[in-house]
Image (cartoon, rainbow, N blue to C red; front, side):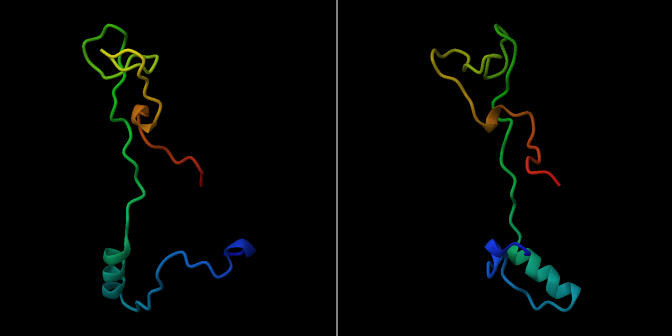
Length: 82
């Protein structure tokens, strides 16, 4: 990295892979997901008999409980942009 802040910072374990097979092994042993589960609390119209949340983010059938996290997102998006 060009930024001084990151001098000496290792982003990932190094590899000495010289073949595609070695690279495949390295990737299989070191790959990890960066996905975050979202969209698990479905929102629906007020008085609808489906969905977990009303449009004001209150949980159906409960009083005083709102959901204000990523479970209400329709899908994950890339927020830092490329």
